[in-house]
Length: 231
Image (cartoon, rainbow, N blue to C red; front, side, top):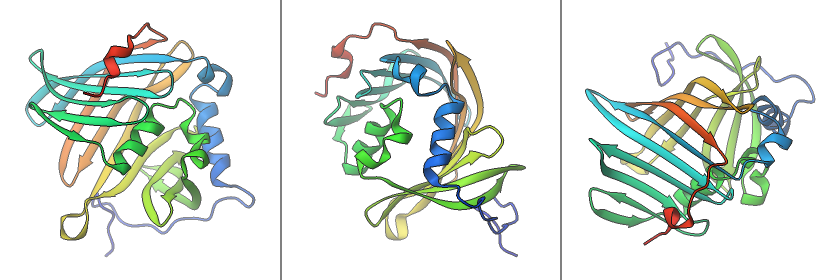
C-alpha cells in the first residue's frame, strides 16, 4: 500500500484539461484573491494573530511595505522570541537573541512573499512553474504546480479547481539524511477590503505541527521604514 506523507492513500494524479497551463492556474489564483487591479493598490499590510505549537500559544505579526519589504515577529507573553526581517535586498533571522543572515533560498521566499502579485511574477524571480496534473487534496480536486529555480525544486503548490485558491504547499527542507518534508495547509481564508487572505494555516515541518490563526488584517496602514532595518 502506497501512502501520502500524511498517511492517506496515494492516488495518481489526473491529467489537467487540454490546453491548461501552470500560468493559467496562477492567474486564476490571483483573480480568486482579489484580482490584479485590487492587489496592485496594496502598498502595505499588517496582520496579527496567534501561533499554537503544542500546548504553547504565541503571538504572531506580519508586516509588508512597498511590495519589497517583509517582517514576521513571534512573541511570547509580550516578549519578542523570533523575528525575520527582509529589507528588499538582504535579510536576517533573529531567535532568542541570536542573529543569522538569510541564505539564498530564504531571500527568494521573502522576496516572493512581499510581492502581492508574486505568483504572476515568478519568471522575473527565475522561478519556473510547471502544471503536473490534478490531485485530490482533503476531498477536493486541486491543480498541482511544481516550482523550480534552475535544477532546484522549491515546492509543489496545490490550487483548488473549484475556487482557484491555494490550499496546500509541499517542499523538502534540509539536505541528505537531515532532509524532511514540510507542508503548509491553507484551510481557511478571510476577506478584508475585497481581498482574500489566509486566515488559518497549519504547518507541519517533519512532524512538528504549528497552527497560525490570523485575527486582524489592515490594508495599506502607515508603516515606518525602520520596521524593516536589517541590523
